[in-house]
Length: 265
Image 1 (cartoon, rainbow, N blue to C red):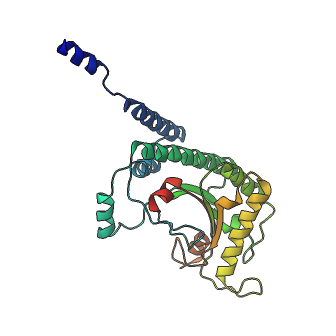
Image 2 (cartoon, rainbow, N blue to C red):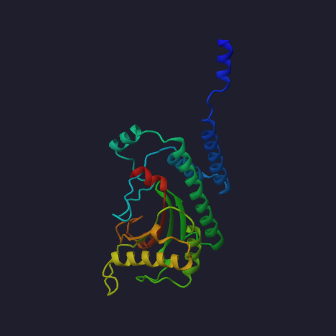
Image 3 (tube, one colour):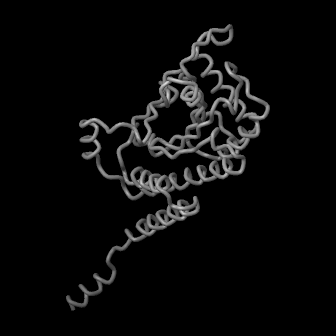
């Protein structure tokens, strides 16, 4: 009798863990499908895949301060190696739960879909030198050269820039993440009545572009947006020549990972 009771108990072993595990496998499959749809798997795509898994499975997080309190610290995945103290902290941090991993994977798939839409638009419009999208550790970065948006030393949008801005606004519509519009300049000084320095120029460009996004896409939620001007102090290339300075004059739209924010609070 006791043996029959034991056999009956074994038949009803707890298998509830299979449900979240199956969901996790489904999300992984979705991630691979999105990456496959992005085209041939070249070295860049493999790098994006690696970053996606690094982020989703609890890789080291960059420090990200709330945007309504201080300037954002946006650290790209290809930044210099972390310090030994940071590495020790990351190694000792507890692993993510299955639920957190699922949420991170869902967000990664979402950001990759936005990136794919930007890449398609770049290809269709021939904007390879003006516009780019890159998946980073902190989120998705959309970078626009200033020459596609503004005249030199000005912060009013070109009329022809409205089409580009409208496409970006559509892509941002419905996203729940915090979005930061950041203006950057080169190191050439400016001193006009409107813009006493590059701080004012970069800040006004960011604000004007953000306001334009709101004007063409009413569904955008202003509470999710911030604008910041960095002047010449966040260059992506040394300001040694005209070509390098052109790279530094830009507007960036950051879609900040919700999972990153929740982990750094």
